[in-house]
Length: 552
Image (cartoon, rainbow, N blue to C red; front, side):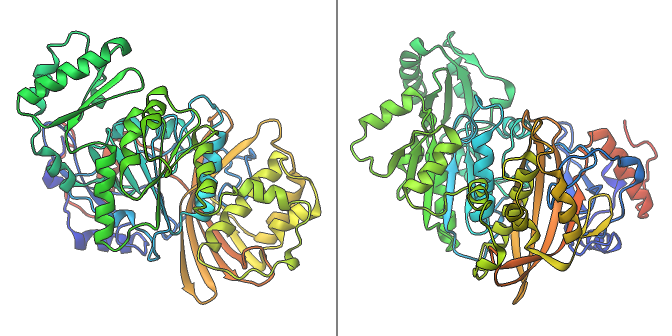
């Protein structure tokens, strides 16, 4: 086991290491992390293995390259067979803040709060068609000034597992374990204030003691047993009586709890102040205190544990077209329901339908926009001036057009190809993930021959964590994470990407591409590999290791 003496740590040393590693950001190449070992908690200085977009980069070793063609483009380029799995993030100890979720200085236009299973994610759709359509709509038109919140009965661990299985975006806020855990930002920092609030009137050991008196209750897996949630499976025909009797027993014990039955099989026992609705109300209160209350909030669900979301003051809601019987019965019993829309489309398709129904903003997904303009587009016919969000929309539109081109989903016409070529600056350049630099226009011209190359084995693309930053009056920097995979969800690959755009009248979004730079995502490492890597870096940067035995 590592001793805490093995690494010298501190903010100043981290910052100096950041500079020596060639990174412009002090929090990029190094970070203090805390061991989650049940036996001890140690601090270690850890380093990522690849640069982020603002780091100095080295060309990719030739041993990691090959000539297999995947998809050319900007953000999902010819990845040359480098496989990248979706990253997993371990929730950090400490006090998370809603500030971590706010990445824009603009007023928050929309906050979408969505359940995951069978709401955002359709487990009956192996190709995740509507989820991908939502992803690209969000990246293009909402990510720059809106918040995405996932509110799920899943634990953080089960959420991470789902990220590996389907193309999920990274939410600004995660409300997990049926509203008992609130985690902020991509680092999943827990809200300790919320945890302390839930402790009042809660005794987990007493809940377990009383629940064991009901033989029909079967514990769910360990990952679903949380500090403020005890979860069981129970047969549907027994659920009503068990919920009534267990509720009374716990009340007689002096506990303040609530029981939520959902999905026709799952029973959760929570603190009385917990739940998806309570957690959302708490989040809205935090945003209000920061003067960042969203102009509109849309809640989305499909089952009984989502019902609380629709009761939060001021929200609009959508019940997706595949909603369960329990939620539909709850809806039918409501007296006031004008704020709730019953979608006809399933899952993410129903969410897009609700955005249109409530006139919350753009609902035309980029693929439809590209398809509708692919036969008539003339760059010189547009007179759009760039506005906030134009840069993110331009990035998504061009990437969408590129993947539709190789998939053969748009016609092989000069007009369709000019949608891409017409926005590339004459002197524009691109640095590919393997370190090669090319002229943008030359790359796009060579790309024309690849039309329909993937029509028999189509690829899917989505863009995550997209942000834009104005560098000058006519220059915008955009950063994002790009992902691609086969329609079966296999061979997932990812890159960090940045692009510099400048204003140009006569283009669809009032911008042209000047520079693109991509970096492959790091391969996921085992704990042992990370340990060895940390020791190597400690030695390299002169950190003394007093005990030569790194592992007990």
